[in-house]
Length: 214
Image 1 (spheres, one colour):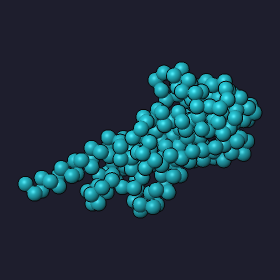
Image 2 (tube, rainbow, N blue to C red):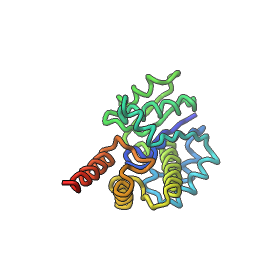
Image 3 (cartoon, rainbow, N blue to C red):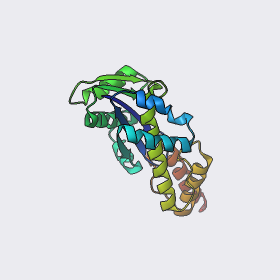
Image 4 (cartoon, helix red, strand yellow):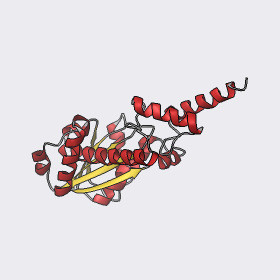
């Protein structure tokens, strides 16, 4: 059995990080679906492919919410958090061969870190841009991205305002974040407080309020 692992939402200031694993007997079915890196696909196409992937593969997902990430970041860095999430899904899958998209600048170190947490010894290949090279990783990328997108839309409904993608480069997300801080005096729910984007804007807002009294 072959397993692919990838994540979505590693860097956003709002919303969860999602890690997904997809396992198949071989990659022929995924190749016939013409899976690609999720970033290269339109949202509607990703959703259709996610449904088709579920029909032919075993799929597992882990959603790490913003507050959980903040707690973990007190003791670990983001790479270590991702390694543990990858290893947990790989262990659950029990695949003989694993392909993963490496977040570490050193893919070999990333491989060793995952291997050290596994109760068995599969063949593991971790590479940069693995989601562009291996269909099983492309499939995991699609699953992770669609799950995160749905979760972001759920958060948007909960908060009652457009929140964009949650990334710092998204003008809608930053406008939402700044407006909420201005009106509520704190970051909105589902925000990663430990991220510089959130900390700097919250600090700027508090400093602005202090100058009102000068």
